Structures are given as structure tokens and as C-alpha cells.
Length: 324
Image (tube, rainbow, N blue to C red; front, side, top):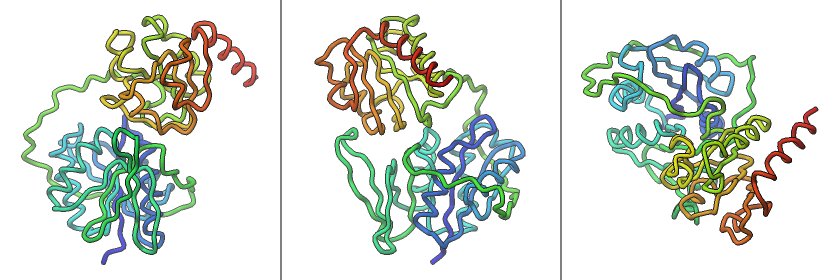
């Protein structure tokens, strides 16, 4: 059996997402002595991205450049990556459980007639057998999965498997493959990004999220200020998005993004079960709400009962003082 583990890299605006480095660490954990092979698709030069994968633990990186890979499509990326999989014949494949990963990996698994363990939040070895932990029932419970035969194919949730330490002294082979990506039926005419600027929400270590209690678009301003001083990102409940206080790109919950930051500050969020499904696995949860009976306090590690418009300015001022 091959000891290779293929890591599918994912870039945003020319920079690899942090979950790619976490995927390398996951592959290394399962196959400590195996070879980690990274693969990157795109239409630009990917040498710097390949170098970064090597610095974070990859032994070899395959880059694929083609005009039809300029924008992500499952057809284009699927063709390119399947070609690499067939040539490398890896023991396993891992990718981030991102919007791209959730779209691409089931289609690859179908083509490969393989199983797929998705949204892994923890992994460990029992002897030589990897055991994957993933949430079920909107995060209310967890199940453990093992792969008994065939390809070990899984996706990992961002911010759950720590990346290895970056080491610029590491050396590795970078190979550019010429793969004909043809017959693409999906044509991307334009890409309009509505996501907020700054730290990417799905990979942020600190998130400040607002709900209906923020009351207006103007009410989100102190949340942005708090997120800025903490070096984090701003999110929202569906209620805040439905009320048009912010864009749906900020939505966290069962029908939005699932996040697991080190610190989650819920501001004016009641704690509906659909919202909890997207953030309840955060490492530390702080809730700010004027209703002491709000459900969010049932999952919070720390709670502050009071008017958010009085509490946030004081909190921001104190954090700024601590940073001086």
C-alpha cells in the first residue's frame, strides 16, 4: 500500500488558506513517516504557494496551471486533481471543509468510488488505524469514524487541527504538471465578492458576532471596532441578516458558516438552536445580552448581562489600554 497522502490546497486571492496547512498536519498525524504530496490548481504562478506548503510540512508539491482553472469549478478542479490522484495513487486524501471542499470532495469521492469522512474536528490513531471525530445533530453529539478499506478520504473543519510550525529550512520537490483541462460546461462570467474585508470569518481565531439585539446596521459599528482591536472578524446571526443589519456573507449558523474560533463573542444574540449549530464548538464563548434568560448563556463560558451599547465601548477602551 502507498504511504503517500495527498493534500488538496486551496487559495484565496493568491494566498493559501490556513486550513491547507492544518490539512498537512492532519496528514502527518496519520502517516508520520509517509510522504505528503500537495496539489495546487490555478492559472497563475504558484511557486510561492508551493514553497509555503513545504515550509509547513509537505514533502512534494504538484502545481497545475491552466486557463480553465482561473476560477473554481468542480469540473475543472476535478479533472486536474483526479489526474494527479491516478498518477500518485495515494493512501489518503485530505482537504479543508470549506465551501470549495464541501463541493469538490463528494464529487471526487464519487468518481473514485470511495468513502468520504467530512467535517472532521479531531483525529487520533488507534494502533495504525486513524479514528475521525465529527459532529452530528447540529453539533449536539459527536461520532467516531474509521475507514476499514480503500482510500482514507476526509475533510477537516478549519481551526481544529493545529498546523505544524513553519520551517523555512525545509526543502521539497516542486513539480509543474501540464494537464489538459477541457470540456468545461460551467462558464464563470464574473465573481462578485460580498464578504467583509479583513480576517476571513471561517478561519478567524476571534469572532465578534451580532444578533437582532444590535438593532441596526449602525449598531454593528462597535462590533467592527471590537473585532479590529482583537484582530478578529465580525459575524452575525440569521436574525441580524434577515433584518438587513448586515450582509448574509456574515451569517453563522446551521444555514450559514460553521466556525470554531478560540474566542467567540456573541453580542445581542438570543441563542437560537440554528445559530448554536454554527458556533457552539468555539473554544471560549462570551455572551453579552440584556436578557438574563437568553439561551446563549446556556452555552457561554462567560456572560455579561446588560446593554451592549454601554458594555462594548467600555470593553474596547479597556482592551486598548491593555495593548498600550
